[in-house]
Image (cartoon, rainbow, N blue to C red; front, side):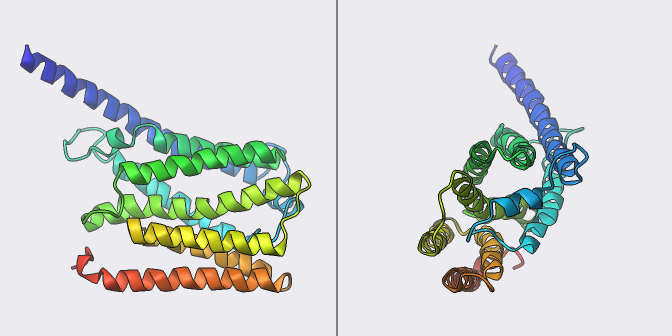
Length: 268
């Protein structure tokens, strides 16, 4: 009887693992397709940069910052393939799909829906969707224990980096989206508030670096924060200085953290 229960449990886990592997791949495809259809204006919707400019605030990054999505999507495809590497012949050493559960799927569905919702100028709803995306990613980092143990280079490069860079950029994007929502309801983001938000965001990210060792997450966030500074070069000087200062501190912290933990480098 005990052997039968063990066998049934093993088969159930294999079926669920296969289900999540397929669902994870499908969710990445969903995000890519919907973003392409929306971005290429095939759905006869406004261009996303036009809507973004309509609700631009002191926290809106320069346009080049959004090019990081190309890297994010490439890494998501890599991650989706990696988690499904044993899809035809299950191996016990790949428990990634079962450990993730629905979190990666939720994040990618929100990713695809966000662009479609945002270009229709449903800014409040887009904030909710992006917050759900961000929450799912942070729960995923926690569930997978990313960056808190010594893992092989394969795991770091193909699993950790995609999720960390994804999360780092989305963290900044969420702050930008919330600022746009305030602008859409007639609340102006003052230079003092914008600068304070950047300082608080940098402090939270530094705390994450200290407690969770998430250097790649900080790097993606620093990219977005620096782009906020670039956008204000000919705008508000206080926000520009704060953004450049915050991104500079984050990059310096990444370098110091990497040096202090060099003994744990997987390259060794």
